[in-house]
Length: 434
Image 1 (tube, rainbow, N blue to C red):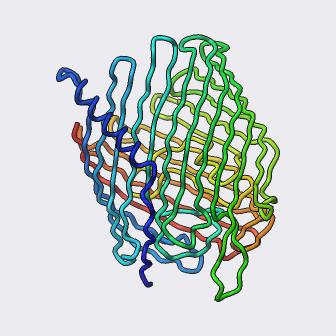
Image 2: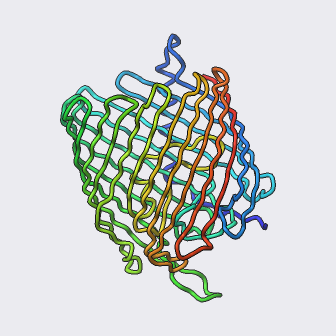
């Protein structure tokens, strides 16, 4: 396979505030550290190896390969009075044994400030930046591609809460997010979004809070619609702006730190500015429910069910866990060309001993594609299934080892060429100094 020359992306406009936040956090941590307290800093190195049976996620070009991930990470978490400062960064060089054109550098950076005042005001300010090989297993609109494609997901966010220990709390939040790709064939999937919300929650009892709010998401896709062209004429695009308005009802029941339910029920209306994408418009019920339950002191169950709409809906609306191990994912679910996306996740964690943890997780995602600009599919269901088994071993105070097996499969009604299966197994060793 011929290597693909990666497109040079412009420097992120989020870089300067992110660097400033990191610098401030580290400087404040140095100033506040007490030698009698545990160090808030950590520095670590990691080495992982992963074998993937279908590195391109393709039904027509199922190539298996093994890659090495060599990483460096650092961070701090410092409390100063009512304030908390944190920053962490990791970078990995991923080297493929055979498909050297996929060699890449992935990274993740996060910094933030959790602040509070004596006047019952509190809030957060944060920024994240991530880069990895794109993993668009569902509703991507580009099938069976074999070119190198890096995805960048950046976000800055802030929130304010008034009320403190009062039963009634007032809330407001804002976030600006951006998704971009290095491969030219994925230019139609690039987007940026502004998310704003405001509302309140009320503590009914010591374990239950109920809330109501309004949320607005404006997603701009400069190349959101592919205009049909006849070769050798170049492909052209039209822009699209999606406006998502939601009325949210929320509930959070937490009888303990390990057991609880959080839920959001929303009336949502989504409209698209490009008339060619009007089929993606939606009015109806969306939401999410997540549960966690401590079966015993050693076993914890988690589950979630969500329905969202629009481009990258899971990225903007639902919490996501950071990536772990040597698999190159951002921990973010990215979707495109779908009107609705329904996702079910299940997981169990078991502490076999004080140093060994085992996990089993699975997910099922169904995206309803009412119009796909790349293949003109209509009324199509795109189904993606994942199951994973992991084992983590804390060998010593500073040493740890983790291994994970993942199986993924995809099927799409009306287009058998998009169906594929993939198995991935990898182990990562880490050394962390604190």
